[in-house]
Image 1 (tube, each protein chain N blue to C red):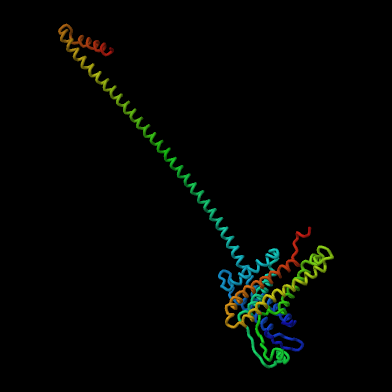
Image 2 (image 1 turned 45 degrees about the vertical axis):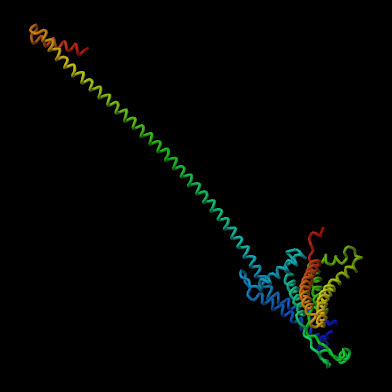
Length: 254
Length: 160
């Protein structure tokens, strides 16, 4: 497998491929959105504006399936950002990879003599990947969701939010804690595993040289599908968790 | 694959900035436009509803006006019919009157002609009688007594 370059800046070990990928994903997301809203029009929307409005409708439907319709609005922006950023991130590693060969140690990017020794004097360095194919990045996204969910739970739904940890009996407290912890962990792992597996398989197919071309085409097509599904799932689950923690139906008072 | 908490932090920061930028420069304006369109559609629907109502009302008014006109036309025809029949009656009546008058006049004429003829006949008959009588009683009566006799005779005839 490829090695990823790591730059040490002071106390930080910065993994370059992830940083580049996150930056580019965010930039592409922002550019797509900006392009779509470049010439906003009420009665004569451009094709890009139509597309983004379709995404807005899609996300709106998605959120409203998780919570009452009148509570959707504040989370629309969050849902849009999540689904667009994750989808673009998932696709980023698909079309190509940037891999450099080296036979020398480059201490500055984490290629040490020992590693070179271990790999038989030949190291391939990958500069390009999906940011979501990195557990550190998906953990960051899941952490954002975790913080939002529990902050909103405490702020909007204080009493019921705290009560749900002892539901239905106080003895269930440890179970509820496990449930609470497992939510963001599964969120991060699911996204990471799907995308990482896709990239590993692409790397594996590439070893077949030209014989693998049909498989590569098929798998890349499927990976686009998987990327869409995972972006949808992540957004959907985020909204479900927010709904569970923060939105409390008035009917439950009885 | 190894864990790098720097990537996690960077992902969080990048996502936060992206969320802020998108909300401010992309989704905010887009949502505003979509809301504006929703209002526009609502307003147009309201306008359509009002104009539909106005059209309905106008239709109703037109219908009423048509009904009124029809009624008036019927009245006019009815009036004309009564007037004409009255006129015809008048004409017939006056013609009848005229005929009666003419008939009466003719009867009166006939009566007066008859009387005239009777008077003429009486004079004629008197003359003839005198001649006959004078022929019969010639020389028996003088001129004076003869005249007295004729007058008396005529009076007798006239009173008959």
